[in-house]
Length: 318
Image (tube, rainbow, N blue to C red; front, side, top):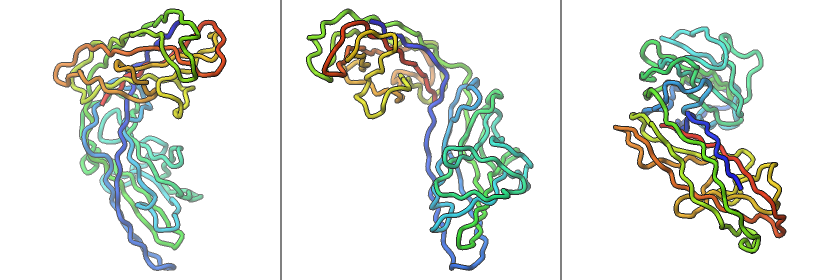
């Protein structure tokens, strides 16, 4: 029985932050301009200097209640400004004051395209907007995200409510990006389980007969606030028992699969980041993560044979 752990490192765990701003409605039928200024993000984000392009390193939700009057609104225009003037940039990703980090606005899961002259067909806003910090592919350099200093960029939105109120909303960035040279390494072990009799798994949900193994995370550089690991398998249902893997198509056994557990024997939740608590921000270093793999019965009937499963190991940095 084989459990192959395949390495993919250098991914980033993003953080969710929220902003709350009160909008005051005006009388129906009136036409008024209301200027809003929101501040996004804040704090420090520590990322590898070589983070792959297109990696979202932070997200900020802009609730619809903070952008529109009751009843919803339409997005008339979206552009970026510098020193009070439009930058003229169009597209989906726009620069910030940090080299290698851009910003992107998302509605209904799809990025919005910035138009210098506004949209010919305004976009109905029925859900929250999301502002993202996203890597552009250029080497990331440590810098502040403040939008009021050159070359700071302000995201500008114009939204029209269904009761004809015009909301001019600007989103200013705050906080900072700290770039760290280098990432950790992690090995890719193959875990072999000894054969087990079906009788040792008497009922659905039974587990046992496994083996302990170690993830070796090495050569971590100093400077990160947190280093974490995540074991991922895209086919796994979030509602399933923790740590239970989808057996690969090469398995000949049926009614049984493999469950991953932590060192205490508890099921390891897949697609969730766990911190490497021993990591030292001041010195970095190498660390061993103790885990376990057991057989797990999934069906009333078991067909004997081999069981194989693969998971991907992600390392994340904050």
